[in-house]
Image (cartoon, rainbow, N blue to C red; front, side, top):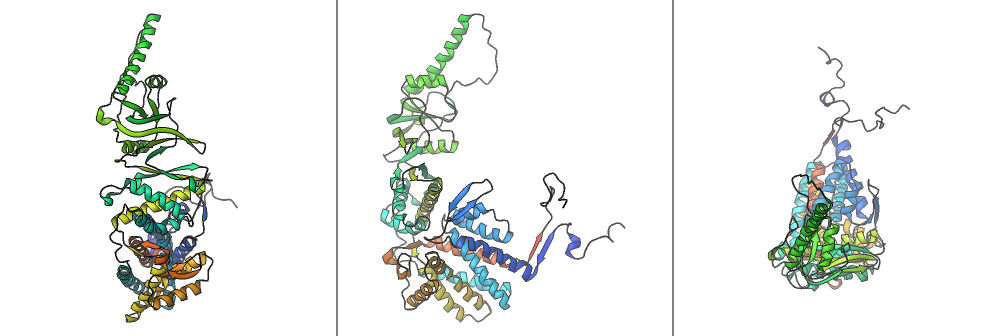
Length: 548
């Protein structure tokens, strides 16, 4: 018998490979997990709300991000801790489902786990906390239904005022003070591309073109596309143009089979060159005869082909990205043709105008379709630095996603922490009616809601205790819509401030937070196997271990 006597350790150590790690029990697994999650939520929490602070993140590619968008922050941080990753996944799910509220999801989940840690130290078992939290989130969803503003479920998604009202708080949390300008731009763009059935609204139809220089007040909305490249050739403007799109490029195509041409004299060589030239001219003339005034190429444009395009007064554009080419086809209604040939009438697209313009020193091609039937709109953003433009783009992205959400469910609830305080008040009352140990967990769940007004107040430099106590006092006397006015540092009725949150955003954020917190609390053992193959992490690149 070989090896039995030398088997190291006993229990789980004897089962797994050498180099694994095993953590179990409250102290090692549960509390360490909650600690890691609280650390992550502490990073995102200070970025919550309109006065949220920016984070400067430099990723593994040395790319700099200066933003207060939680989804971007946690994506670029590359979180390694397995429990904290669950919170990242919850934030990502919120971002994909709604497109806004990732910060609330991560911060609230971290707060719930912080409160759970207090309960564990008091002597409660994680299972009792999970039962309490599950009851609390179900009750929260019931209360949330009651807080919905009456009549908000009926909404005209093409009414700009109603759209801006619902979009304001999402955009203000990214660009406080500039939300009115941005909301107006985003609302215009979204309403332009909204289909007959608003539920089919596609976020991809609102594009963003970021151009350095100027400021936000120089930004505009273009009905159509803005391509960040110049036209090939000398023709820079065409009105009421039919457009032919060639995905395979505009050039003499090589033959599929290889052949050898034997030329005996200079005359034959001259004739050969002429036939090639004649063939290209024939193809370009065929395109011009079809009525097209603009040729769009997916790849290179040959010199000879360009020469004949100029002769027949055809404007030539080159779009390298196949995704951009698809959007261009969607904007103009063209069908991309694989090879250079005469297009049919139904394969041609149409644009009111295709022109090259200079915006802030950058030459861009603007494809406009003012008439109906346009399915793409572009928000042209101006700003002084790339970081500012990236942040503006994120704010526009949040606005567009909010529009998509309101097309599905337009119900609104009070913002500015009014909803959270009301939820906290009613959940505390609910916890007092419960008889089991889970009443403590429900009470702590209610307390967790105070994180939102506390964070909003702290980020704005206000006294959190005063704000929270005055909010509770107002809500106790029946003023359900009283929230924080951050500009004046006082508690006011938010219906006069017009700060409303979408019901679906809050619903999913709280649901994902509770699910993530319960998932982390259910873990009682962490078993990390030895990495398969490859050098150990503490090994030098050469393969040897550190000598000293």
